[in-house]
Length: 251
Image (cartoon, rainbow, N blue to C red; front, side, top):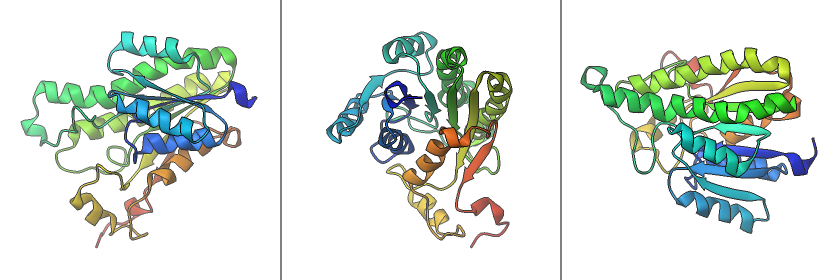
């Protein structure tokens, strides 16, 4: 596929030091035109920063929990070669909720599932048909080790949503694979971002690598799964956690 036809849509890319922006920079460096999506106007700053670096980039404000808004996004960007579903957990306006299951209201549960799993559903539903028609495409879901592999108290909705992303990945891999489209997931562990808490930073020091991961290390896995070199990888979940889930005992 020629470089001028390669486009990547990356959701949840508003944070300067987040996984989404790292993915956008990674794809841009590979020659993609990147469309960055988030819920606040800081996404326009992220796109402008990439353009000043010489890359082709656009920024789009979109409530990815709103099906009509996602369809408008698809009209604005056009079809995508790659879709990265990175939106989830929370947003600048609505931070992630930490609450024990017995204290969760129904609205809390609905929001936890919506911001992570529904956003992936709606975005994929908007962009996958074009990939199938083209006979080529890549969908990479940014899940988490939280849910599919491990969890923490107060994260039942988030865990269910991220585990659901992995289930969605497998189901779509079966349906889209015959049309030249692969669907895979990346499951990060402790990753250092501006949103990291002191407790999370301490936990990261107990990984076999002795540190938190970097957003660009997750992005490298995403870019690989979206590449032609990963053409026979479909329905997989690639864990990027420094080996942390291998340990029963953590220091």
